Length: 230
Ligand SMILES: Nc1ncnc2c1ncn2[C@@H]1O[C@H](COP(=O)(O)OP(=O)(O)OP(=O)(O)O)[C@@H](O)[C@H]1O
Image (cartoon, rainbow, N blue to C red; front, top):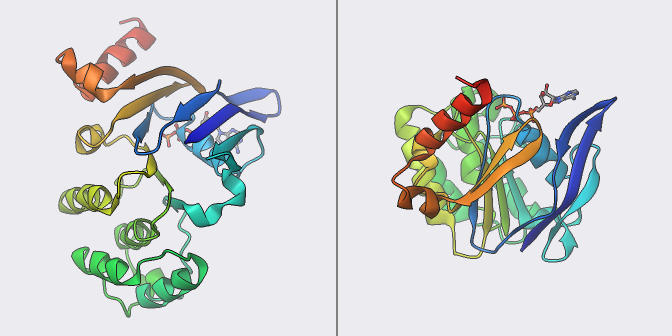
């Protein structure tokens, strides 16, 4: 279980994030959605203790920040070592993460058509993101946090990445995905947190939305309309 306890991020006089207590159950895939500047990355960085914040994020009663070996963080703020090749990066992760599945990582790199012996710094941004996705999803982490994991991927690779995410799950992981790629992720998400100006404005199960005959795109259209009072 992931429990967020009153997370708050302040910068000078501005409050960038202010969350009440939220709990996510093992096995839930949760979308963190919101318009540009809504606070998605701020929320993720507060959970990961990458920025100064109040409150805490606990994974099964343990602070997330004290158990990075249980957490995979996939974002465009890459964690690979640029002068490594994907092969060398995999060896490094194998040393660091006790459960890292090197064989599956290699298969995933191959699915993405990545060259295992090319320096990551010489790859395109999309290819670098693929290395991050292949690596993060091979960590066998309990908590997988993805910040805009599909944005720089081509249309074919987005589909491969979504399928890779689904295939990588054993069922008990908690997955948080911040994304604007609603169509790609809609059928993968169990639950959505809707952020606006650093506050969670809505929290619902996608099933409930679908039961009303609506899609995430419809939801956001209405949400934006209400915001701008059109
Ligand atoms: N270091 C900082 N200092 C001051 N304000 C910041 C800082 N980082 C982010 N912000 C502000 O916090 C708010 C939330 O930013 P954040 O990056 O979390 O949004 P986001 O929902 O991830 O947006 P996007 O969809 O555009 O990536 C924005 O208004 C942004 O300007």
